[in-house]
Image (spheres, rainbow, N blue to C red):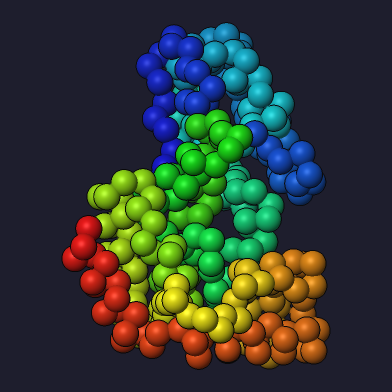
Length: 294
């Protein structure tokens, strides 16, 4: 899967949305160090090839300022940019090899940390009440959500967030497969985010994921009177060594917790929410009904 833009024609100055990478998070010290090293190596390769920035930019199809940003560690280069650079500079794969380093810091720090935890978890319990949970979203649904946020994002910011969220979906392909439990508010499924066709594809995606043996998707009816999910989102991840981490918008100031007493509170709330929600079978029937109404 790739959501990266294509390199422009030679001598064409691309606009900000088409730049070959993303801005580096100023709070991500490790990311800054990695990208600075990659940029420095790229500059040394260019100089060793006897190419000035002007010439290199012309061949690559980007403005000089963009090349300076990447070589100066100010932008995260995309994989195809490094591949093209390797070809132009005759680096015999040495520049392309840096894609492995870039991949480790390509996404925002918070997303990387969350994805790392999800990749290690053997059990994941998630309750979402504002939107369909990110792991369940289609790419079109993600884009529609990001486009609706205010203040608006730059195109490159949207691309980076979508790419990061899409990368997290690899959790469904893990082996051995973790146990994944989702509870979604009915209203989040009935909201036609992105228009009717995007909505249809999102409902179809939920039905598709719900067929996986390790995935449980339950719907919390809007007309449920006694509701234990009014505190907002809940996430609980359990790991092979018996440890766990959890978070809830309505508990412990929304910060991640790992102490057994605090985790029991989150697990109790989640358990009550699951008990109030429709069964996976009834939830599937409801989603099929919604799909038929679109």
